[in-house]
Length: 207
Image (cartoon, rainbow, N blue to C red; front, side, top):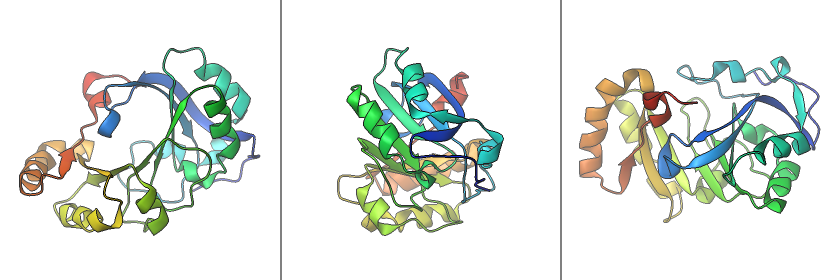
């Protein structure tokens, strides 16, 4: 469920924002300010932030206020996530962040056109809704969640749909990680262009 809200080009339904370490993918372990926008039209059954789906549950916050909160912290990396952040026109927010020397990352399912000025694009495709080719080609990082053994072959189907410099990651669904990690390990040994991504923030108990 997306929810209508009162979003304008200069404000967004904000579920939460916080300063922490990136827990997943290429930038694991680096400090970043996370901006979690509410609203999603993909609806993964194993989503760990289902509360983010309905944008109407959350306040509409001005981009300037989001920036002011981010400026209180040391890192100049901002990660826009969700929900599905590409639902919204991110032009104003990303330009504001860039004007203040932030590197802007986005985490998206790839199902919508991207907007704004982005330094790093992480696409995490979902079986429930096909990602756009244009978003896959633009991706700096492909992160496929492995929830079932069949997901490994599905992940491989994206290899030739991303650009040659895109970093390839397989990430076990957290609740099934003990079962999935041995399969992912064996897969990567056979396909060494891939890497494993673990949700280290959950393992060490930080946001």
